[in-house]
Length: 327
Image (tube, rainbow, N blue to C red; front, side):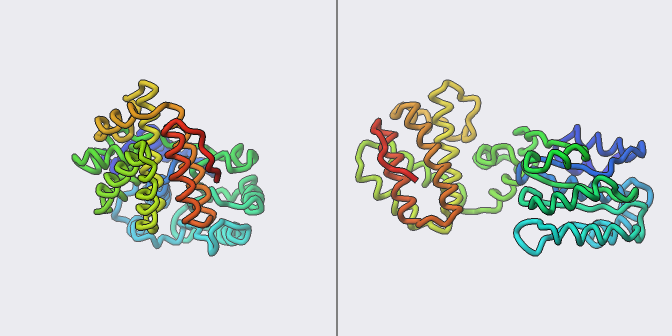
């Protein structure tokens, strides 16, 4: 018999576990679903919630509860949408107030807390109180990229489910045959879908590879080309840093003799050629510089200074010189 979880690609173990818990009437009062952005945490949570409020606990798709949950308007499914960037104590207090009222239609009231990585300590303490003595009809589903950000006392009171990496075959089911996007998505279905909708991504990727050729080249004047490239594409700077980091990681893997770990397999020939022109230390230091630049960029450090320091620093270490640049 088919079920709505069949529409979700991958994560077979977690889907089976949740479905079995529903069918056996062994649903926990709280779950933490952990996984990187784009791995389908929200889809799994919404599907699970639809089962819990369905009249027949089967996500039949025809009962009133299913129609409402499908449209995102079921009164017994509460999704926490904070007014500010972080989930604060006031948001949790509002949840506590909402669950003090028994379900309107179903025999369960489901609370989904998405993007919980930014939840404040005060909000966690407020949440802990209700997790210690939850109403019997409430099910919490907390979505987070890193469960270690939650208090140990919260983790001890929930069922933790960690999503597993997708396979290349899983991503192919979504994308079809675009091998470049499959490689660049790092087997993350959400990222793959986002890239497939970005018409300029493949061109940008080729341009980034050219900039790496500049930085590995012995002519220091090429640094100016890279700085100009960053300046010209300032609005895409986050994407550029991500792409360049992925390329340099692949160069490190090649230097270590681990080609099977390449993320950009379709660029293997070019990456091998570039790896032959630099040392392992230089490629590894470049990944560190880019990672640090990403952090500084998120803190709104002066963009011109940042990209100049990054370009100079990478060129020096890639050409066997001690970098004088710092971030």
